Length: 181
Image (cartoon, rainbow, N blue to C red; front, top):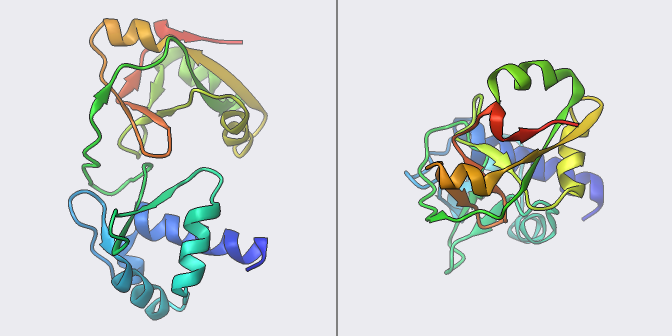
């Protein structure tokens, strides 16, 4: 499968597993899982057929590890980033001292005023590394990397989770915990 087809498949899977499962006639369970069989059938019905081999390829090669199979391989879900109601059931974790958030410079005034908000998602996404984080910011304009004092937030009672693909999740990041460039 070439890179362009892999990207198209990944984007459609992100859409139906994170935002619009009904687009493929799917219904996610409370933790965001759907059977692989139902997903493949739903993709075909939606005019976006995916084979099991292609699905496996997308899951294994996605740089951000956006998707995960259940231990027995019969179910699949998005690791995080949902706008539909799900409870991913991640355990609370102590974050590293500093985490990073990639954004675009055009959002800085709002962030300086309100902090980092989850917007339509369930959590604010943070990372322990910087390269992919900057790439995320670049999708929306001129990228900028924000430093978040995660350990200090945790000490003040903010609850952090870490998804299976390593993304750190928190409800909100107040301005006082953000270091701006």
